[in-house]
Image 1 (tube, helix red, strand yellow):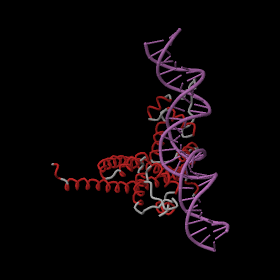
Image 2: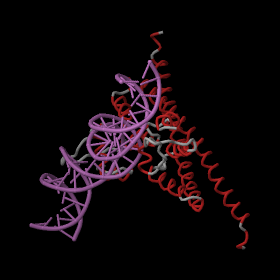
Image 3: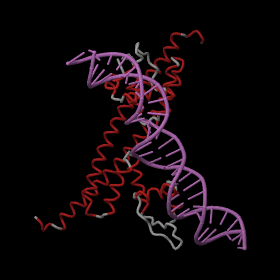
Image 4: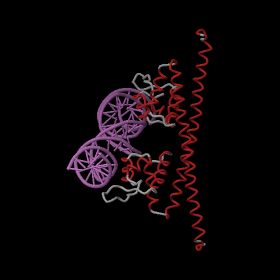
Length: 127
Length: 127
DNA sequence: CCTTGACTTCGAGTGCGCTCGAAGTTTTAG
DNA sequence: CTAAAACTTCGAGCGCACTCGAAGTCAAGG
């Protein structure tokens, strides 16, 4: 699979894929005879997982730590697990904060709704 | 209350407070005779609410829209409500995505845990 | 044959949200 | 009275994560 095809499949731009390779998030991949990148489908789940890390707010530098451990093979599994456990904790704390904020937003919205209802009560002349 | 005191109370830096004023998130506040900003405690809940918007990922430009509506007074309440309702929707979608990601993370972590257990089963010689 | 378009490298540019430093004035504690 | 701390304005700088454009190579379709 060439880079354009991969870009479509994983919903990143070609520029971004090359950028990820440059910084080390994606491995240096084999090239065909015209030095075009030729990807194997096994890259897809890895990119999808990077997407999850990104969605959950992991900074690129931490993804990079994880990616480098992964490339060193099975001996780094314990460390990778630890990293993910810590990140899991951060994410779940963040979710909790967001849920608090949702309550505040709901309160605010309800306040505006009340206010609107009162307007109608106090000025019913324009029926 | 002077800016340094306010900074402590709302956990922003003095620089950030002035920046927020500059861009319009905070109102231009009255100065004392030596042109130092002199804040009223009523600014605190507003800053706290801005913090909620920020926590939930609202871009500054949208906070600005809200702030400007607020300054125009009660006539803009319907529009503000609409804005918050839309934002509420975005946030709750984001929470849903995060919760999906948490499941993926849990799966990954469980995988590492399994792998660790298998290591012990297959190489129990070092008891 | 030749155009089209996908690929290559490289370095520069962008947008966001601060963050900082310089240079100067004012306030406050000892 | 003095020294340190807190305030002022202004514009520049930073870290992040891309994003883009220039200039060139290569391969396939008409």
